[in-house]
Length: 215
Image 1 (spheres, rainbow, N blue to C red):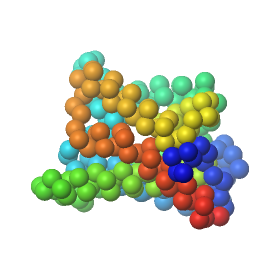
Image 2: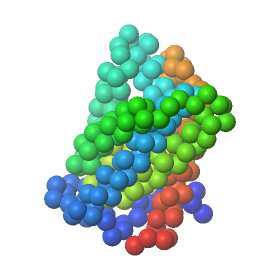
Image 3: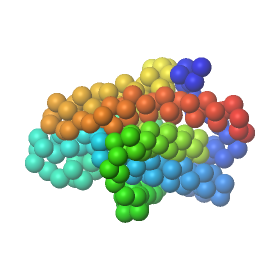
């Protein structure tokens, strides 16, 4: 059921257009709340220390190949992904900018406030919790429809062009990114693999639940 979800639902807090610079407070609230959950989940993935997210593996691999910092590569990759939006009919909105700010702040706060676990099973718990939080947060802020982050926009843009389920599109993107990062010298951990295989279905689950149970 949820694996066949293809669309981002329109709910009571959805903006009529991603190019909306005067959204309602309700829309802005759900956008920011979703990004807070997203950033918290990303932070837990980092703190778990058993595998970076697929895109960070790619950033690491490219950084190793080019001799640049991971932060520089992350910025350049985000910029290149945004350029691809032109071919996917995706639009940059205020949510695209807010995405960078809130997620970065929440990742830093999580790393600062949450201690690195020593128990492997607790590390796995943090990975699964992080995947669910990122999936939940992604769903909430995408429904706000004020503009996606670079990588989520790639997902929704490719889905519209291919008409394939969101879970399949996102999983395919993550697997390709992991392979490229690993090929270029990035380090892949068990958490990376769980994320690559789990984030697509997690987003699809929450899209299904939101569309069925909320208005």
